[in-house]
Length: 264
Length: 302
Image (cartoon, rainbow over all chains, first blue to last red; front, side, top):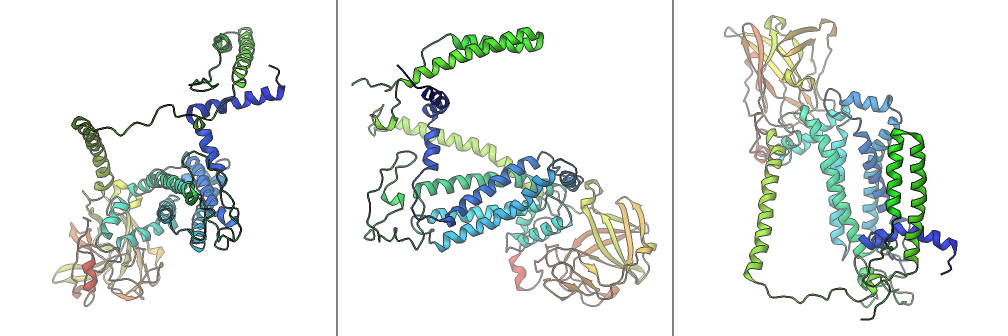
């Protein structure tokens, strides 16, 4: 069979992907996720969620690298942070990314939340995703709290003292909550290691799980049009929906969330 | 059913011997790297040649058969009918879930206990030896810093404001106030000069103890949120909900030894004639008297 050389090359290049797709379906899944249908009038406002996710991934990567050099015990914590910042090659950059990226992540979470609120994107059927988002916000803030102690300078120490004591003033359970956070009646050597463990293992794990759920619901329910969308208000004639791809879920007319007829 | 290309048949390339040659080439290359360069070169050559042949074989096998998306064909296995369930079936399901729950519990409970319980048991305040009481001049304030638990190191360093009140009924009397603000636990500072040049440092069983004379004429003030206290530790301004905590003390062999801390709502009187109602130690921001104290009925062991 005569074949063009470029076809052969293409076949060879695609072979590993086909191999993977045939055995796992992963390529189709990723394509479904990346190239799914969204309303035509999505705008830059809709990118705040992806921006938040990107900020989180930056924290994840830089945090893993910082953990290679950080020493979570009271004697060495601060000096190891100084060492990262002043001595190690590019340490200042990676630590700076993690330190400022933390603020970026929190700010983007709030901006994304504001966008969802103002667009009314939390309404039926997306209430559950709003709740997951609120959990993500709380977990993200807790990640910020536990990370703030780790440089172990005066600011970090006293800010953590105050934060734990604020938790301690919660009625009835407060004193116990504070003891759980400190790992004792007073802040001690274990408190730092405890915060470190929470900051780099438990809380990020929870965040990753919640983000997975958040994304699943986004893919399942689709993206909302902005409130000013003429298309969503049915002012342009309805066209037939392009046939949905089968994949993770079969998008029905509602799940696609694009053109709900006014009569619906 | 009509046989269609690519249907129910994995797209396997025809069997060939090239991978074997490829593997031999790799082995030859690796062994050659250790043993001799010519052998490695031969190995590299073999690897390249057989790798090329293998790749050509593999790519020619797939291109002739256009792949058909799985979801467009018929289902390979018909949907199972909802079947009747039998007691044994239900028992096995229950047993699997139950056993899983038991195993999960056996693993999880000790782990959670280990994460939480150490913060609540064996929490005791170590005694602190602050040296001979002759270091404390009558009527003068000293800022004492010391390690509460030298085994745990500098992180247990605490500060107390100490004034020798002179003798009361032939026994020495001290006012010993904790520097932990009763608002949210920041370190309060004396409202007046520190006499750093008269600083004393002494070694006791509690590591290095520092004594700095001070004159807290304006009482004690917190730098964080502006809580202010008088010289007895009573709140005079700002957000604190009670007075400053105090230390118990004993005089042992002429040395001042600090014991546990306790909480105070408000001190009546001053100096050695002060009347102090002692409350169990509570966290900052938690009132010890009045109706708001009902919100904190239980305290973890301090």
